[in-house]
Amino acid sequence: MARDHYLPRTYLRNFTPEYLTGKKGGIIEVYSLWSERHRSASISKHVGFELDFYDNHPLDKAWQDLEEKWPETVGALQSRSTAAVVVDTLLSFLAIQFVRVPTMMERVSRQLSLRNMKTVDIEFEGRKTKAAVMDMVKTSDVLDTIATMLPGIKQSATDEYVWTCYHDPFRLKFITCDNPCHYNWTTGESFLPLALDLGLFGTLSDKGRKPSVRHRQISHEDIRKFNRLTIENAKRFVYCHTSSKRLVDRIKRHRSDTLVDPMHGGRSFANEPTTGDPIAMFKRLEALRKKDRELGEEK
Figure 1: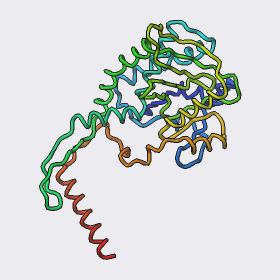
Figure 2 (figure 1 turned 135 degrees about the vertical axis):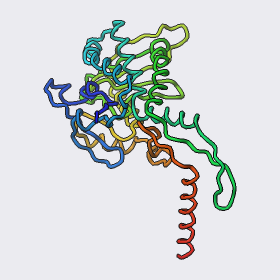
Figure 3 (figure 1 turned 30 degrees about the horizontal axis):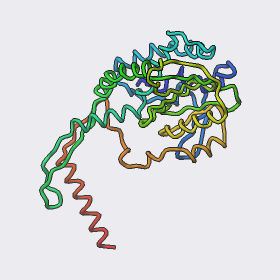
Figure 4 (figure 1 turned 60 degrees about the vertical axis):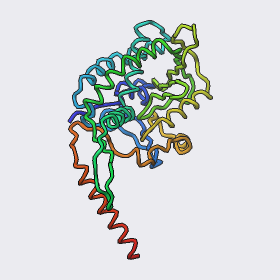
């Protein structure tokens, strides 16, 4: 089975110690949001992938072609380049990284499930009623939908935003996570950590102001702010180049609580989804509820 990296290895490598030292290794520190533990892991074998996640969809191959250009693009950004080809690759990578992660795949699949929702007549606990049933979605349908979204996302990033590439000269470095592209659905602000010493922040451009990419040196305060956004945006894991008790404390303080919501549990898309019998499902639920009531009466 193929390891489909929703966090490209060429991206993760920029958050390993070798990015600073030039040595080979590919080891990153993985922090769990909920166990309050961390461990060292290989970016090739243990980080940022799921088996057969994209089900050989053509989009995956197209994304791999862009990934090959990423090291050269990061090197150009370190030299403060604003060349058109560098900016185009940067914003293409940003748009793709926004949609390729499990978080966005899940969001799209639930929208498709809701759109295809069926209503069935059932009898439940002695009453005739109607029930809404949402089936799982095919992975290919999710990726087909994402393929139609991508051009608009890239166009918006190109035409509607002012982007600042922040350079970090300090000991305190950027971190990343399993959902690294932060997007504020209210303000439109966006942030993507690019490397230990590079971060991309975007705001919607003012009327009449030409969209652009500019380079700035960051402050300690802004590094902390952007790292907090990364922690808040993470779903399961935060990644850092080093072991840090301070980071463990910050994760406990700033992590999102969405994982504890039972409505967020379970995957709503699959490579080969099976269709269940909704009538039988509600009968099993009815039987379980009846058993619970009987056990409660015995107590």
